[in-house]
Length: 104
Image (cartoon, rainbow, N blue to C red; front, side):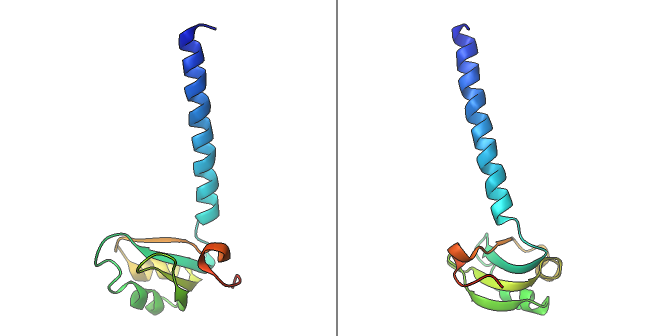
């Protein structure tokens, strides 16, 4: 194998490992259709009405989240996402190890 082939193989392996890590992270934090979710405002002011809208969508507040302005809720993902609308809010799964408490 020439020098170009070795460099290409090394970068291809790194890209594959990065892709595997990305897929595992997506699988771990993909929000459930029903259950515990973490709401994270992405921009200043995005969280102003975030919790009120989520509660209007049928969610129950469980706790404050691990990040500033974030909240752990329990509810239906589709209803919460519809209630929040087009606000810049990230909805993730809330694993008990990061967000405290047992799974609901």
